[in-house]
Length: 190
Image 1 (cartoon, rainbow, N blue to C red):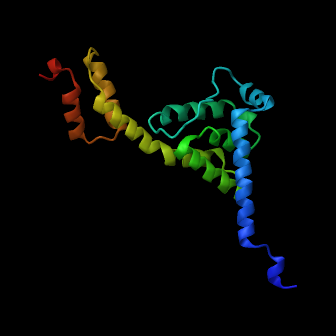
Image 2 (cartoon, rainbow, N blue to C red):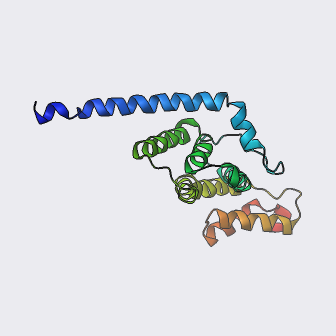
Image 3 (cartoon, rainbow, N blue to C red):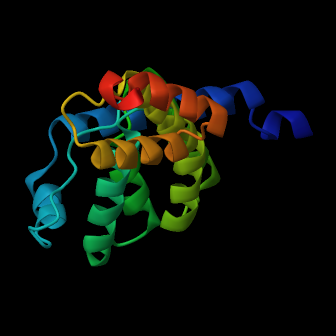
């Protein structure tokens, strides 16, 4: 018997791993669509003040910051409900959907499953924020500040909100002043 015949074929191993990932992905989709009652009760038994962020993040980077802080608070409020890193990772990753966020989830699940090691909450937070958050906040602030008009808003309220958006968007001072002059009420600008 040769050494080659006792070792599994690499292509066969890869094929089997891909098949396992597809099965797990299908099972995850089924659990997302129809969570078992015991799981729902387990994750919903904690403090009712902190709502379960059952809505998913679908990759649209503008609402990421709001969705993410709600999810972080929910995880923290329900910390003692999670048995291990696997449960936290699947609770978080199962809420990432769509072409970009869904692909990110698929890659993360595949890496963790293959390695047999699930990221800690702290490491998962850093990775997700690195991938989605920084550009999301800047993009959202840029979009908001370009269309943000004073209208009937009090001037001090307008300036406060405008400054917050310009800082969040990382605007240069010259550009921020130019936009402020353009967006403030014409009577105030004169």
